[in-house]
Amino acid sequence: MTGSFDGELREQLVRARHSEAEARAAGDEDGAPAYAGRAAELLRLAGQHGIELPPDAPADRP
Image (cartoon, rainbow, N blue to C red; front, side):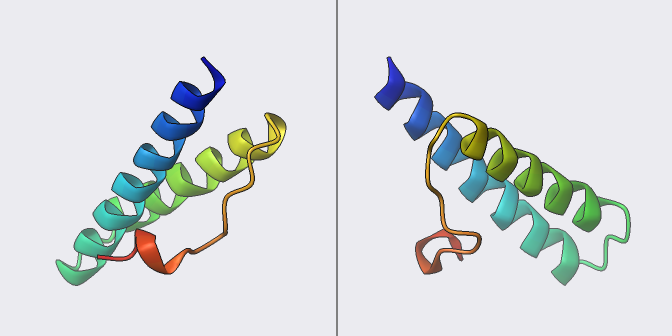
């Protein structure tokens, strides 16, 4: 079950970072910080569960 949680967390982080980048590119002044906050929350959650995720992994970038 832990691997499943870990994988889902990683996937959500990738999606949040991609969405943030897309929002910034589109000039979405509300969406970009919201997605950045989501990514930060996912990193915090990972830390609480002992899952190490790099703050900004190259594989996460589009």
